[in-house]
Amino acid sequence: MPNLLSRLIEPRYPATAIGLEKGVASVVHVEPIKGSACKLRRAATFSIAESLVRPGFDEPNIENAPQLASVLNELAASAGLLRQKRWSMSLPEATTRTLVLTMESPSQSGAELQEVLQWKVERGFGAALEELSVSKERLQKDSQGRDRYLVIAVKKAILAEYEAVLESLGWRAGLILPRHLGEAQWLVRNGAAGDSLLLSGSSQGFTGVIFRGKHPLIVRTVTCTHDEFEDEFYRLLLFYRDRSAPESNGLGLSRLMVIGEGITKERAGEIVNETTGGDLRPLEAEDLGLQLPSRDFSFDSIAAPAGLATLSW
Image (tube, rainbow, N blue to C red; front, side, top):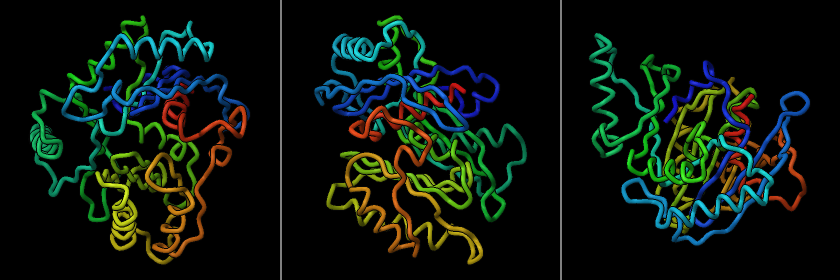
């Protein structure tokens, strides 16, 4: 999996991207327009059999690779993108795992740092390092001056399943990242004062990411039922409010982005405002600088792949 910062030295990622989630597949082509805004030039979304892609960290994900390849080929054809050969891809949320790892004490050497990171990665993801494709990014130090790392992992065998589908079509993967990191690009590329919250929900729970500026402050993936969703979301917000929110002169949460299943945007906004004392409304595509072809087009269905596509410029 490419490093999150590799675009600084290898910026030519494709402007076309694929999004896969249980029951849904999407393709998009995004192009920049005036300023930091962009538009969805081409896109298509299909509902697919839920058995076709079974997101999971430990088990095979793709039941029928030729059938999934056929779906993607049909999607590309319907969007007028059959000639594209390079694609980024957002993986289903349950397929990957993301952690923020904190070093409790300064390491004495580079070798010791790598040993500590390896131990934390294997413990955090519950798998041997050799089984994983891992990407890590060094973050800003925490309030106590400790080093922190954003670490993303997917099982190599599972990543190979997705890559093999692309290869069978003669396509190449420019960038492969978890769904929430594709969605998060809309907050990162449109940086604003104060903290930003992404709530990315699915049928299996949610991932919440709080950014301070352009840097992840808290990343929390929660597996829960629909009935537990609100309580777990409250817990995340209380942790932020009590442990990580700025002092009284800080701006606190200034932006909220809600994507996916599990909770309505309106209810998520109510919970955020009740917990933090703010007055936020969930951001829509136009607030984030993306022009959709019509109001009937669902931003939720293409937010992740379209976010990856913006990394092409």
